[in-house]
Image (cartoon, rainbow, N blue to C red; front, side, top):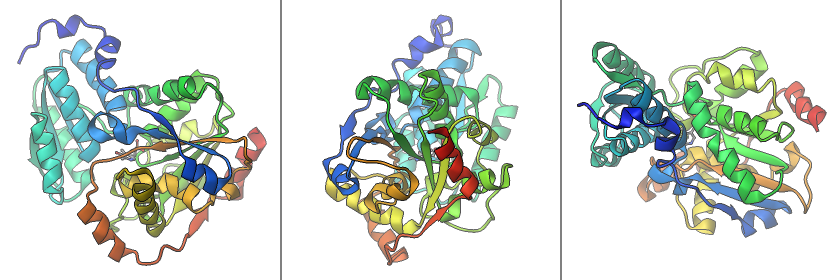
Length: 350
Ligand SMILES: *Cc1c(COP(=O)(O)O)cnc(C)c1O
């Protein structure tokens, strides 16, 4: 398929029509629990229900306008949905690779955007390998990585520009979750662009998905052991991208892990309190406020402003939420802090 006109377009102009400006919502409940001011950046209300369209959409705009790309190829649930949406808007064919255990409603959502779905591989890593292999063999096709590319980080950094103009002030901390680290890289780059180089980013993972935390402790990218099936599946990336580790050396970042039980508990509380359903992967960030563990991480008082990135996600339904309840019966908060060195880095920078 040859698209005329698009290739002469500036990628930034194309990109500006993809993500929407999401609300920065003041949470009365979380502010009162923590005794400070908690703002939620609601990327669950973003198009395709996650922040992914920012990075993926930016890269898709670039390859379509500059590389004469006629088929976008990606993998994964939320990245796949975002890529399918971007392709529809950019008038380009899309093929998404997904592993065999993908829920039917996700496959339908991607097909509803007009994309082709190929089910291949037993997990996300395998599906992603098939996507790359397919691109090697297919002319005019482009691989869109879910998290490990400078264009992904550039697109994701747009969250910070929005928070800056919405908050009208510098936050005391930003809380986010980390999977492959594409969002974390975007947030750090965004902070550096707007001169928030002292704003600490609290990087939350779950116990089975803590590749970023392990990497910071070992000072090199560290792969997770194979075999586990974490509930926080959007965070379940075997190896965080090396740029996340590099950037965390030039910005205050505190890696923290929480239990699955904490994420699920936060997911249920968040739905009750804010009337919104998000993935446990996303709720892991907000669990620091519900459990009030945030006070062990940073010093804060009634004037502090904390921004939590609500990444959102599609891989959650009432049935899945109900099921996960039986998987973790005990909502006992278990937190693993990283080495004192990383902890000190934050104190040192303030
Ligand atoms: C992709 C995703 C994440 C993790 O983002 P990374 O860039 O891989 O770190 C977290 N939450 C949701 C809902 C996601 O879709």
